[in-house]
Image 1 (cartoon, rainbow, N blue to C red):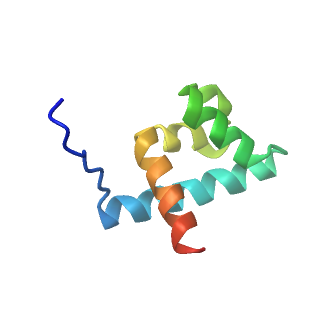
Image 2 (spheres, one colour):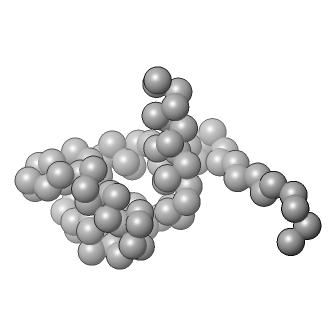
Image 3 (cartoon, one colour):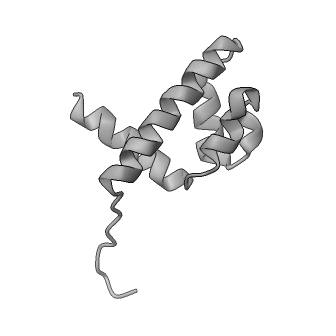
Length: 82
């Protein structure tokens, strides 16, 4: 380790794709009677895609993105809206 801070950046195009996918997944999870926050947190912490329903291809859609990208975008959106 050289003591430098690592940078983590997500392109605007990727940000838009991830945000759109998160919205779709949350809507579909709600339709199935799940709490989307609990399910997404479980997935992001554990990496187990079983937390995301296969309904409307949600699991396949969310697996297209790295969990760290998803977490970064959710956090950025939260900070922007505060």
